Length: 205
Image: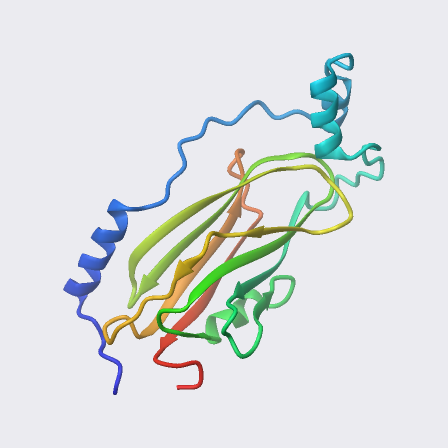
């Protein structure tokens, strides 16, 4: 059966329904501190020492290079157990090319979004992953996920969103434009990119 393109009125109704249940963050960020300041804080406080060790490791990094970006977002993967192939984007490549590609997703399946990133120099506080979804130029959903605070290390971190269900039904099938952003308490724009999801009746439809 052919996909039914929703009317602007139907899209506006979907957007209104999503806005009522929009994930949002009401969070007041703490003052930013350098690694050296954190290391020197209350060295006799055992609980604080363990917190610092969990965030920075037993040996805080010394090879800090201020000329490199502090946060580097490296990869986005759409995690779905029933997907026949891996659905991923190398975010160190050509971001403009993603606008011409589609993630084909079967309607009604459960999936998660995994974002991989590096923290290279200083502790970053209150990382957030923000995702805006539009259809036919109308924003129908905006979701913010609190990722957390991370210290620098050589290995990548991974953030996995909660499970969600792909839209289903004749009206839901079609292309969705998604604008993703990785930001933090200081409102730094670590990376913004656009990609597309195409909801179909089946993976190979």
